[in-house]
Amino acid sequence: MSFFSSLVYYRPGPPPKVTGDGLSQLIRGILNSEFVTDSRDTLEVKFGDAIDPESDEEDEDEIDWDIAGQYSLSEMIDALSSDQRLICRADVSFKTPCDSLLDSISRRDSPENEVDLNPDCMAIEIRPVKIRRLENEEPFHVGWASMYFSGYGYLYPWTLRDVVARAESSQEMQHLMQLCRSHWPVAGSMADPSVVALRKRLGELWPYDKFDKPWDWCWGVVETG
Image 1 (cartoon, one colour):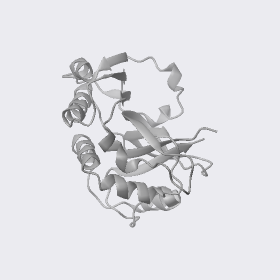
Image 2 (cartoon, rainbow, N blue to C red):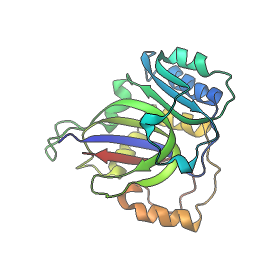
Image 3 (cartoon, rainbow, N blue to C red):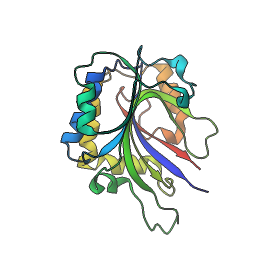
Image 4 (cartoon, rainbow, N blue to C red):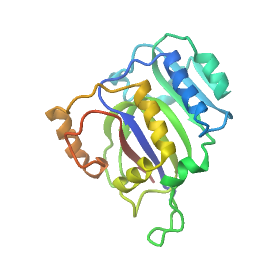
């Protein structure tokens, strides 16, 4: 059986309004960080109304993308720059993140798990965000935009808290987290009772001490196998 995991940095709350130009600025910030190379990667964009929760169960294979293909990051920026149309779906892959970015969330030769955890790609997604562990029957819908780091393997013996602590100790990850927060900020406020209740239902998928932590981007995980 092949296990696959994505460490997900997601934006909670109502769907953000994302334009082509706004997405291009985030791609530019990632390129300028020098944590990825300007290689030919995948860009898929669908313009339309802001991200719609009613499209949650949409068959992604049937999306009629307005932009779809292999582009260098510079070409992605040129294609999206100054475009003020709203985006309802987007996938931007970065196939060559630097090793120093991924080392903090990689695990190899663990005596407790012969299956290594090897994230080797990152991406930005504009779509409903769902997180889950292997033992969860149903995923939790937690947001509408995310940056994620994916590869073969699964967390055990690490917990999500372990991985988040490792990620947030990395200067490279801290830089990318700040890019996400500054481009698509979340209004800073204390979580209301319904949000606190959701976080409690997440169990170990909530990797923070306080359930009433003010709204901001959060870490989660998707494990499959």
